[in-house]
Image (cartoon, rainbow, N blue to C red; front, side, top):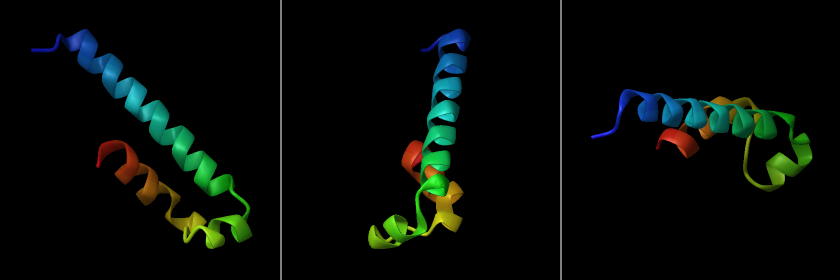
Length: 53
């Protein structure tokens, strides 16, 4: 069983990864994003699914 401290660290790391992923997708040039089949408006949804499944 994980300690509370370990759980908090893991949650903080996942939140940081979520923010980085979301910001990268949102900041991507629209043309590049569309070439990859990604809509920048969906950055939050995509990042959430990538980090938490």
